[in-house]
Image (cartoon, rainbow, N blue to C red; front, side, top):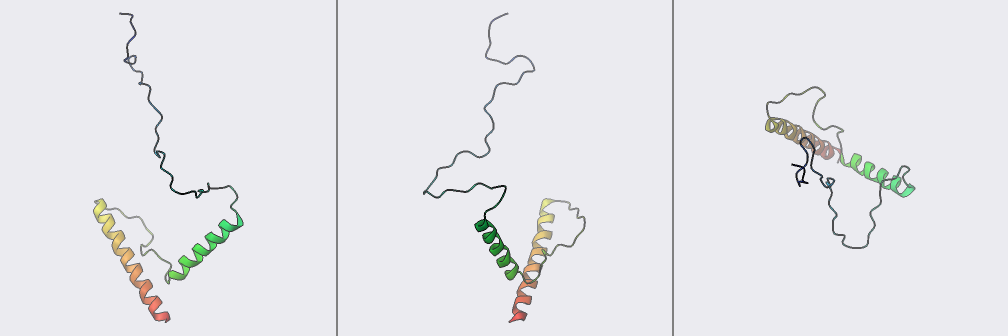
Length: 102
């Protein structure tokens, strides 16, 4: 048979639209979102420095609560439990240290 077919030839992939993982969103308001730049502006550097200083001021103990090393878990639930417990210990330590400063 020599007719045209809507099916692709054997082994060929059908033509597809390019994947779009971020579909266009509706814009509300007129604020422009800045794109990342190779050289940040002075305003952006000041904002980043303020953000970093605020985070460091809130953090009395500079730790996530998880010691360095290689961890192997039997399941994601076990890993999540370990991470949650470490985070809870770090938060509790931060609270105790901040209370001791007063």
